[in-house]
Image (cartoon, rainbow, N blue to C red; front, side, top):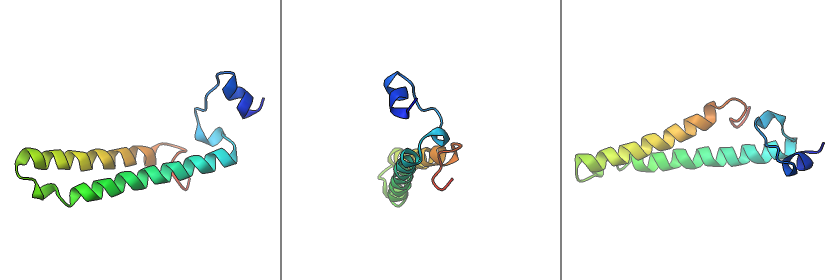
Length: 85
C-alpha cells in the first residue's frame, strides 16, 4: 500500500523514521526552522528581562524565554525527529 493510500484510508504517521525520504527531508527542514525560531525568540526575550519595570514583568519575560527554549529542547530530544539524525 502506498503512503498516499495509507493516509487516505485513515492511517497516520507515528514515527518519522518510517516515512519516505522526501517527506522526512521536508519534516527535518520544518523541524530545524521551528527550533531556530524558538531559540531566536528566547534570545530576544533574554536580552530584555532586566528592562522590565517590575518583578512581575521580569518574571513574565523570563518565563517566555524559558518556554521557548523548552519547546526547542522537546523537539531536539524527541527520538528520530532531531535535525541531523
